[in-house]
Length: 170
Image (cartoon, rainbow, N blue to C red; front, side, top):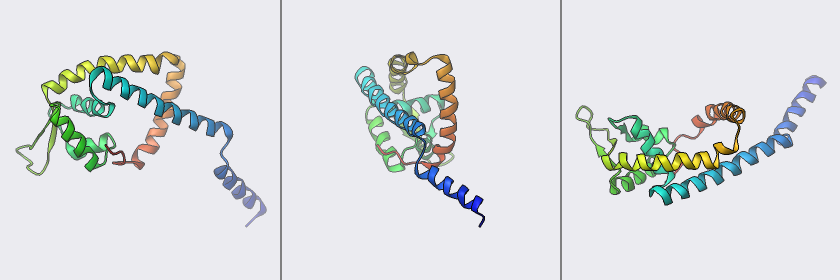
């Protein structure tokens, strides 16, 4: 192996073992901000609309598909484990927000469908949630910041989302 190739490999290993301070700082700020914002948005949504943020996410997906969504497909969309998602749907069904339906043409599948109460809850929750997003997130960023952040997060999502299907638990 040439000395040049050895130097390049060595430099590559060093950059992997010691990321640039600015990259570490960006990661840390993203991580801390995301966790803090999710905690705040969850607490405020629970207080103001009576549902946790994870339920809101389920309701958003169901609202987009009025005929319902297969349990396993919905679990994958929102990154839940199948068992964790089953528990979430159990609780949401007990609260009257969703119901399970077996389609006539496919008796093996179970669809999750939004109820009228779920739709009303969603409408109320949306107002509170959008206000909270504006107050805790959008208000602090310029339009240029939002565009740059969106581009960066799209890249990260494209890479990261396929790596974690079904990992989040209830």
